[in-house]
Image (cartoon, rainbow, N blue to C red; front, side, top):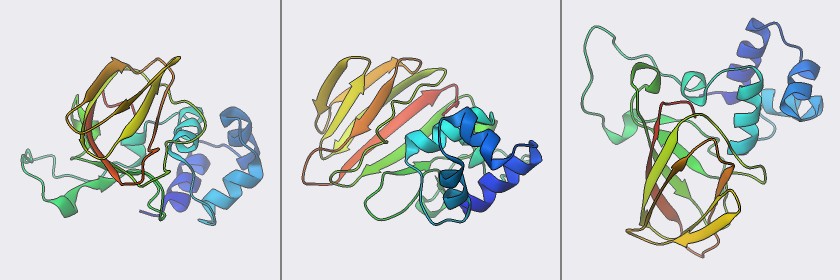
Length: 183
């Protein structure tokens, strides 16, 4: 997906200038311009701030077209929707199915060493839970941070400010779920 073009298209459809969107999202209009030209990739937290300012959910932003006549049950790895920037060294979030058509959002998350969801904390409606499959991840919820290892998990109210950060030397894989799919 061309994130920059998708953002520009939605922004223009909503009648927002780059300057207006930047002010609402707490970013500079230069940053918006760079993202729309695909000259920089936003962090997960920055993209979430932009989409909240529009407003549109990440699930809707990255929605894929599924045949609504037939309920899809099984998905192959290549059918997951990439819902975060995919630059080298950044967090990769892949969504199972089209979250707009379901009440549950399931993500396969990959955090390379040093990667995080961004310096800004994320908040959104709903509840979030996940299990670490491999590696280690530092999860901060409110004022509490814990390092989780394979088999460890988390569950919290997503309205609490939170972020994820890989402080280890190996890639971390997490499978998570959010309901409703507001992320």
